[in-house]
Image (tube, rainbow, N blue to C red; front, side):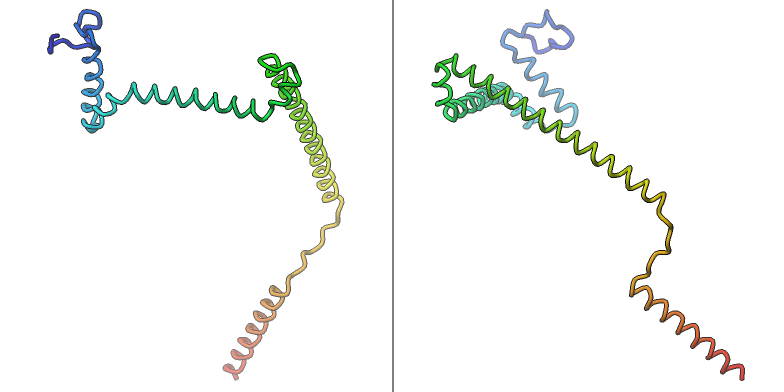
Length: 164
């Protein structure tokens, strides 16, 4: 094992039978790019165990999902021949039922969209043919206008009084 051998420069000729230099090379590159050296070493050491753990948890989740499906549908599975044959038939039936349900939902959504388009077209046509009327003022706006007019009149009277 030569300490002067660089794994990146001499890929095949560098003696690294246990892969230690490659692992530490990652840590050195991480430190060179500003990462914490302790974190880089811990990351280097935990990479493989965490990948294995993640894979095991993923496979365990799939198995639990399958087990729950089997427990939930076991009567139907037994009625369809049991074993693998029954499971495959029930899965096929459930898949077919799901596709039909999805197609029905899609059709309903298309029909609703078509109805909404017709309604919006009707509304725009009604707006074109409607007479334009002045908008009604709310009570608050009417009060504001009355106050403004009253202030204007009182100002005018005040100016008139000053002139005389």
